[in-house]
Image (cartoon, rainbow, N blue to C red; front, side):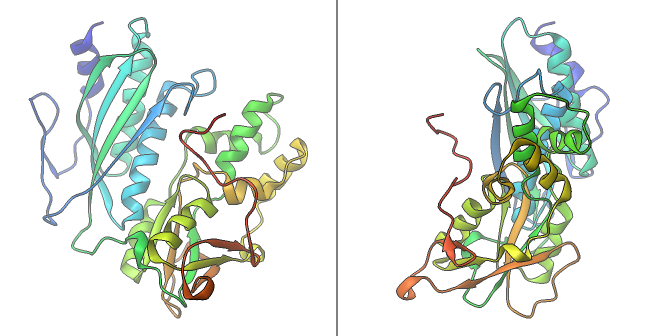
Length: 318
């Protein structure tokens, strides 16, 4: 179809929020930032590394790209308002694939009250979806990773381990229609971050927050390191997920590997000052303590370091 025809199909009929003063079609978009500041994040999806088109539809790939970027804004306590998308494709990519990814992106953004305001299309050796998101802090201070303090409670919002379980089921093959299987596979194909819980946590006074993209232990480790504290997780306080447990039994896997180190759920983890009235949807799973000898850093699970998988690594040897 050519670059401009594909771009034309991608933006046709898309709805823009009131913050978009000038959408796609010019050399640059113009967006309004009522707060005077913009929370900005960027992420990429690479074919065969982050998605496979024999597992996911193009629309699901687009929706996943919005989820993993929008969750970063939610983790700062903001709301996504605008997405910039660059798409790299081999020259023989069917137009339906490019259009499907664009449709998924556009619809997912609009569901958040945001818009896809621009981007680019280039030739590449494989499909690459690169997204930059802008977010509105609505006058609040951003919730950083570095704000956790001794005595805080640790809480999570959203599901844990479902994306990793879905990936394990896809890799194992077998009957995808079995009870609960499709539910977990869907969680891997299209994560559902608890966007509103990020805003609610910021309003409630969360001291630190992050989205769970690399795994619960790994991402809480980022908070521990940035805040120079130690975090303790109590597994007895993490709600059991019957669907996850069934999948673990069927694959002879330890479900805690998925829950603690799976990644890509894009749930939220935060610390709150002790005594805070936590917003609905947040569950306490641990607390914040000083590190060894008064120092900081590290995450303990039931009093011990989690010595197995350390979570997702972008440049692992596997």
